[in-house]
Amino acid sequence: METFGIDREIRQKWLCKRKTSMTDLNDIVFINLFREVCQKCFGHPLTGPLSETDSKLLASNIFEQTGLVIGVKSIKNYSQYILNTRENKKENPSSATLDTLARYVLNAPYTDEIQRKKNESHYPYWFRYKSKFTNTVIKKRKPLNWKKILIAGSVILFAVIAVVLIIYFQQPKSEGHFSDDFNSVESDSLKLRGWEVKKTDEAYWGKRNTNAGHLTLYTLKGDNWPDNKNSPGIKNLLVREIEDDCFAAEIHLTDFIPKQNWQQAGILLSEDSTFSGKVLRLSISYNNFFGGYVKPAEILIQAVVSPETGNLSKPEEIAHVVLFSVEPGKDDLIADNLSKSALKIEKKDNHYRFLYSIGRMESFAFKEAVHGDFNIRPRYIGIFSMQGFANKETPIPAQFDSFSLTGIDCRK
Image 1 (cartoon, rainbow, N blue to C red):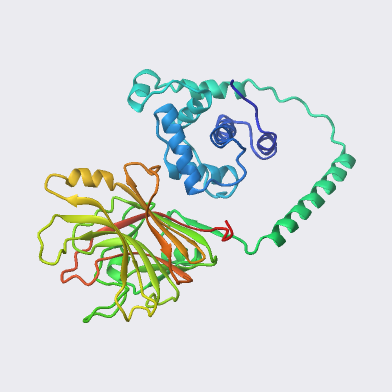
Image 2 (cartoon, rainbow, N blue to C red):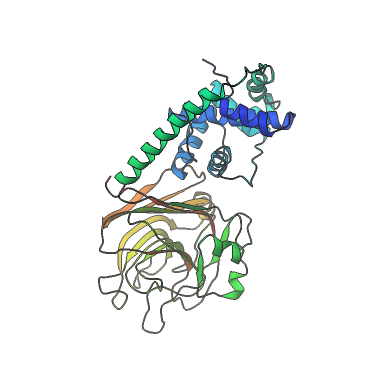
């Protein structure tokens, strides 16, 4: 059954603050359409910006029903714009995107981009949805009864205050959220958003903006654990503080394909700001060292932890998940499957989960590499790219598309 109706809050915002024009009409219809999409997918109204997980779920549902793709990052940005969390960044989705959203709401037949371009390049479902709004007549409102409004408003205000106080005193700790799409990687901008750069290599740090919308780091020689000849340290390590005891940290990479021994990119957790004590590390890495045995090189997910005594002892590898054996003729297949990759660490008290995702689409689900209990209380998190203490430094780019750090309830 089709459902059309302009949300009252949206209508008021439109009437009071915007001039009547075709552009404004498109915006108001888009907002209402996106709200209907969220209602259909999640079974409840859109009340807050979509998380990375919810954005992936919505993108996957749209693709499964319509055969068409809307990017996870775009969906996340749309929800932030609609809920006024991105006031300085207006969203102008294309007609193709609007048609895809309308197809989802109107239960249109399954198709793909080639067939739509061939048979429905005029985007009929978007204009069908929009026509219901174009024909809507805005009736003259009755004079407002301010006395009733003030009484009702006071009652609602006291109820809201009571609910907020109850929730506040029941929660042991507020759960924070930070996300970064790296749309700006200027030093001042990064600093304002809470980032600090460690062990700066000026030449390669100057190349961090080579791909718009990404932070580009390079696999330079270095490691957070020392060896017999080298002191610890990762160049251009981007660091911020962790405020929550329990949290989920996630990074997304674009086209990161390590090709030399120990090239890797990932997430670091540390108890101290020097990253030289107790540390947990999760990365996409390359290995071609087999103690003299001849085997194909491998690209893997690696998780490593420092021992109880810190980095004065050898680290322990707790996960070694081989993604690909690097064999002749497989380069294009490997590159295709690593076009989108993601890493995630979840912490609840001393229990950790290490997860990863690879594939051609951002919506591919996470898989668990390993989980376990570790006596580490991280207060700092870093994102990095490095090549360990290799004899020959071979810098390749690691393009970070996004980062998120979300506090979670330790009791669940």
